[in-house]
Every structure is written in structure tokens, then in C-alpha cells.
Length: 277
Image 1: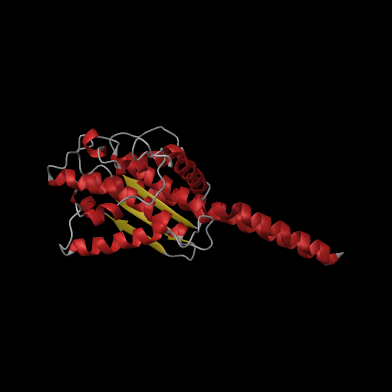
Image 2: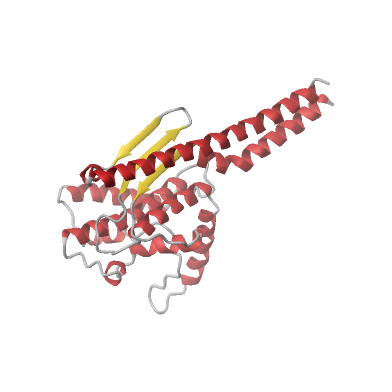
């Protein structure tokens, strides 16, 4: 009987660990970012909508439609910052499809090979050996992320419906993946910061102060160099707000961790108590 109780307790503990695994992944590190924006969006996070929004950055007409022509260094800088958001999400997808533990793992995969070849092309580009109009690069530059809308290549394309069904299914699997959604949420927040004011400004999304606390006790603080170029009263105010945010976040973070530890210990002690009868 004791073995049966022990097995049941172990199953209960395993189920608990699985159910809170996503939560634990989020709270094992506390990250507090402080930035200044002109507007704050009240829109709630919608994973599908956020995915569509980030994917749209790859559209050739995206920047012209937003009034960022790229004629000046400031425009180019802003374009690059938008593109980096798409790149972050695509990189996260790449890691998932090569991770054997992921539900999206699939090797061999044409996308993996194309992504790796693209990285090699980009290395050559840094040395001036290729240009973005190179036909080979244009082919490799196609995003590996599944498109959130049907892609019809040619009026008589017969495969677009099948491709769209496969893409839709894969996107749904992506949005069911906690790790991918966490990256998507963060990227969407950074894009909202970029969108929060005049799109032609180049300093909208500056994170002036960032503090990260790891579960092992490491505390990492980063400060943007432009913070120290601000007038003293602005700099002091930002640092004060950031410090207060870190203190409040740490208190909530530690409270949540203590709750989880107490919960697991309670289940373990209950199991030992029953097993000792």
C-alpha cells in the first residue's frame, strides 16, 4: 500500500511540476527595464495579432507605408531596429526547430539549411563580398517563419491552400509553445515602444536602465550611456523610478518563489508522512 501511495505522490508532484513549468521559466529570473516613451498603448497582448504585426516588418513596403524612407542615417537606424525585432523572433523559431526537446523539432529541414546559409552570406557581406540584390541572397533571405497569411505565387498556383493549412497549423503550434510566446511578448513590447511616438525619431525605445536578478543570486545592472548625458534631474528621476521598480519586483518575485517552494515541500512532506504510516 505504501508503494502505491508513494507512486501516487510522485505522479502528483510530477503533474505539479509540469503545470507550473511555464511559470517557473518566467519567474526564475527577474528583469526590470526602465524606458521613456511618448505614449503608452492600452492594448492587451494577443499572440496571433502580435505574430502578424512582427511578421509584417518583413513586408517590402512596410517602411514606406510608415513614412520611414531610409534616406537619412536616422531612418536607416530606425529601420534596422525594426528589422532586429523580426530577426529576434525568427532566431527563436530556428532554435525551436533544431531542439530535439521541442514539439516543433524537425530535421532534416530545408529552413534550417537556408537559415544557416543566410548567416554565412551575411558574414561575407560584412567584408563587402556580397550585396543584398544578389539573386542567391534574395532566395536565402526569405523568412523561415511561417507566414500568417496565404501566399499565392502566381495566379494558377495550386498548392497555396495546402501550404496555408500547414503554415496555420505550425503557427498554432508556435503559439502553444511557452518559450516562443515569451519571446513574442517581449518583441511585441519593444515594437510598441518604437511605435509609441513619432516614428522618425531615433531614441523612442531606449532602455535607460536594466536590472536582471538570477535565481543563483547573480544581479546584473546595465545603464545606457545616454542616461548620463541627460540633465541631472532627469537622470536622477529615471534612476529613482528604476530602483523603486527593482525593489517592488524583487519583493513580488521572492514571494512567488517562496510560495512554490513551500507548496512543493508540503507535497513532499505529505508523501513522507503517508509513507511512514
